[in-house]
Length: 524
Ligand SMILES: Nc1nc2c(c(=O)[nH]1)N[C@H]1C(S)=C(S)[C@@H](COP(=O)(O)O)O[C@H]1N2
Ligand SMILES: [Mo]
Image 1 (cartoon, rainbow, N blue to C red):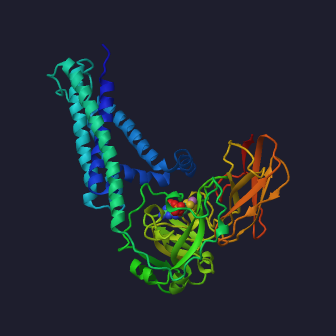
Image 2: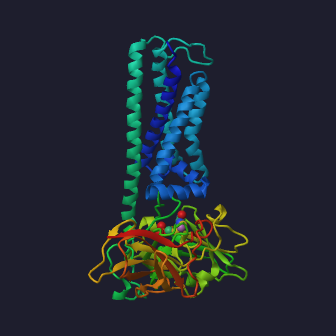
């Protein structure tokens, strides 16, 4: 008879891990979401993961990338638990040291980053119950086999008087039961913390004042209203979300403040009540992510309500020699913005409103930066709490440390929305096939969009009426003499400075992907 105990000890370790995560997530979900071990581990790991891997995760899992991370952590944890469980067959004491050590690791991380004693409860109770599950299971496993009792340091008494047959059933019954409860508790804990966050969001709801300066009415010509073409204004729910937060920080508007310090004459602190008293301005600005692939959708356009950063910096008085503002988020993310982009006459805002509502939690509640003309990673800090006036030579921001560029100006870009890739299209009543899409060159403005079918001549597209140079524009270009069959459409934009969209294919790192967007469709 082969010794099944190595397998049973491995299983016991896996089950103990599930009980640990389950207990801890469940308690954390009920008490305080930020003390959940999976959250702590995830947030510790994200900054250490190579950028390329994060980008791949985002492209594979989309906005489910955070869920994918949680599941990965549980699987990796269970594998480790299995290995430790197996170690316990011959080195019982070592297995407990490892189980307890790894189990309280999140507590150590939490305490070192400013958690309270109460926050340690979920992980500690999890460790206790996880170890209890392990002990209970190996008790039964010892009874299932009576061979191979040559181990070192093993407690010979475990299950010694139990019957093998009953114990095997008891082992598997207990293991299956505990695993199921553990996994259900993980799921419950995760959903409870999501519910808790949403409830917290309702409590801190802000009432926005009327803008002192409103954005002009959107002219009819700003949107072609073509089916399948992205609308000129992006609703909040459809706005892309990119950040390094496993769950968006829940920041209380009432206790929020922005602190301006560093190379300034006077430090300035402004609270939400003070900010809302100021004459707030509405501006339309399109945000773009530097990781957006050619033809990608990590770009959106909103009406932002906020106070000019220029005015806030004027109060602080930046000192000579400063050339950068390092903005810091409540969750520690940082962005380096050229000082000039925050002090010149562009609509750089400390924003509190997005499309007529307080900022949604995912987009930086209660306050974020919006800077026309720069990619989000060097400018659009969400949950912003600090502005440090400094120098590029002295400080580096989150993504710059990871190989991305320091300044991040947006490159002129365009993409095709219509027709959809690979679809069959028939000419409309005028005998035309309409191609259409979006083009952007924030703060410079789009001068021209050219469209080409197969390798034919470039045609100049019609542009939607410009809202401001800080926003994207729609383009449309009808073709009337397309032969039936497969065609490729390609688009290329030119900005108001005469920069032609770069056609060379380049990866996103360090300063945005380049290349022309093209797609195929079939004319019937
Ligand atoms: N606190 C914080 N702010 C952040 C980020 C982040 O990871 N953390 N990501 C930046 C990046 S890379 C982009 S593209 C924009 C995206 O803003 P959105 O999620 O509102 O679209 O936020 C920026 N602000
Ligand atoms: Mo980004």
